[in-house]
Image (tube, rainbow, N blue to C red; front, side, top):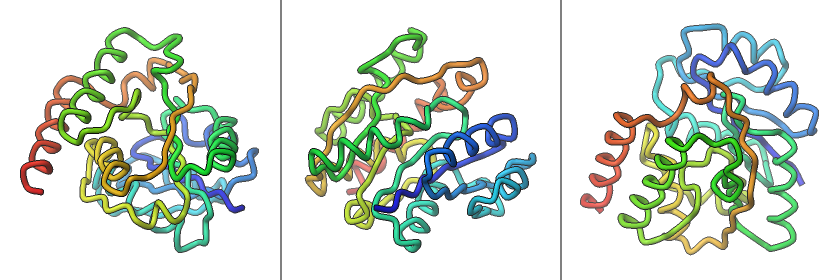
Length: 222
């Protein structure tokens, strides 16, 4: 069964080489979506011999994931795993997700940092919980880590995703799609690697408010 790992990357020259080396050691195919980076992210990824798709401009996380998932499906992937480029995830979790999917017949498996929050700063825990609450109130589905970047999709499930979001709100939109299609899903605990660099990425208060507004617009325009 072919696993393709989709890595959206925007200005990740500090971490992308190490991440690609670790994921390659797992034997998975890799697609890096270089989302309009102004640094050497794309060049480094190409030198690692993986598939690189370049966005000419920065289109955002949602657009990068959409590009990567579509490319993975076209490549004949049986399982598609999304994986952040900031060094937060551990490559060995990729096959943990696959094993759970196979054993339980799940369409989607989410790696949840909140089921094992060791080392997770309190501010980040609170922000993630608020993201979970917002996702539940808007879309009626509760998960412990709606903002996780580590997810596995079977190819049939991935082919049904209809992602309209270009930016950070895509994480909650994916959960909305789980509810809309009644996908069989589960969460498993993962231990995230927190560094000053990884903590500088992702959501902050202002981005969180913008994300929430975009999700509200999605809800009322349904």
